[in-house]
Image (cartoon, rainbow over all chains, first blue to last red; front, side, top):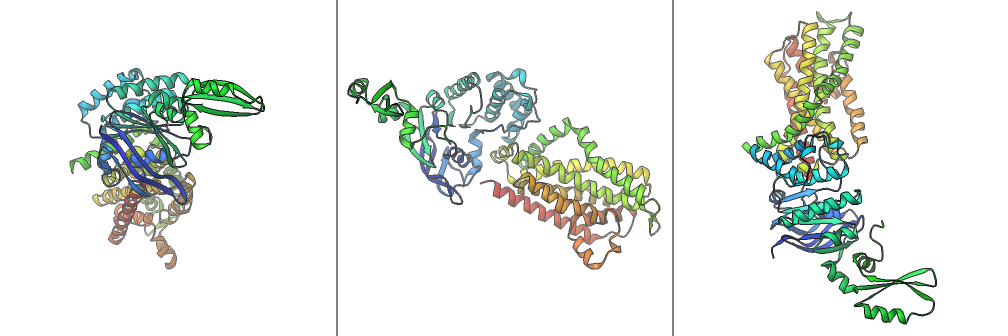
Length: 287
Length: 249
């Protein structure tokens, strides 16, 4: 499989703060790769380096075979970026914002018109095309940002916390859109601190914590390494303990042999949150 | 080369769309200050004063035009850029697109020039009507356009350099406001002590006012001041390029 994003010992420091430290990563063509971590873990810094907005302190990173520092112009031609905040011009309409992105990427006038109509239809924003961005709902703004970033048919789409601040219904609509983009062949690099988002969308997940990549693999593989079955027990009526087992039989055996002061709360499948907590000692979403 | 022009226009295009939507508000707000100065200084304070045979109104009018060029170009180029960069954070979109930093700097400067010229042409029409002594020669137009470029570059530079809204406010208070009143806009520098004059010649508006006044009133033209004005423009443009390089990879 073609490697679309490669980083080697990528490090970014701001003074004494180590935002990203020695990151080795490979993202393959056509996959949705999720970068999971709490706020301040280094996810956005990694995206900023990969999208040529920030120079790494050391190490290197390539996107589509182009070095993000030495060949930043070529990188800019193959990437689309949807930032965490609304990065559209709020005083312009959706159509104007899309046209602006198309102009920056040198699309001709007839292609611009065709592509704008096609993409507005793709995300169901045709009726909102001439509305000023500021007047749109959060979900519409996000969809408008995604289509604006797709104007030049990027090979790789970076989505930085794409559903943060959106309600559950809007979030699911965006997930559908991301899956459709993936099915259409776009490689997607997505950062999130929502476990369910990574589980719902990503073929592979990298877990980043305090600037370090602490685990990497398919969600199921990560859970397998930990144990596919989780047992939550309450000890002395105050402390909840988590144990992980390869299968349900092992978990059941453990429960049957619990000491009298421990009470079983639940036996369930393990998830990425369990993986994260075990690896970092903190819960995703905690600051 | 065609790509450079196309990219410059692409950067300018988005600001022109904004201007088209808000042209009346933009024009009115940019004319409030010069008209107040005109009424307060031209008609109020200076109604009985004359300089070497010319009325104070005729004297002050080129200064007010220079002042309008400065405030409209500086604000037109710098304020939206500053807000887009620090508040809306949509300036990153330019940095992530495959356009050159040169095109970006010039495109962002041109919106200041356009807004500066719209405001100065409006105040110039008022000026020609109330002070028929004004000569709008090609030299006058050259100085006016140059001034708009110089202050627009300054706007882009400050818009890129400021790390907070307070930085922008501090610069306006410490540099733009004193420049407004001290650069020979409302009075002749010949009345001032030499030491003060030397300091004031480090302000670009001083040269802009002197050149515009000389061209508008048919006085001997201060070519050195025009060179100094262009020098300021070059320095500000170089500053813009450095700031953009620091902002991008």
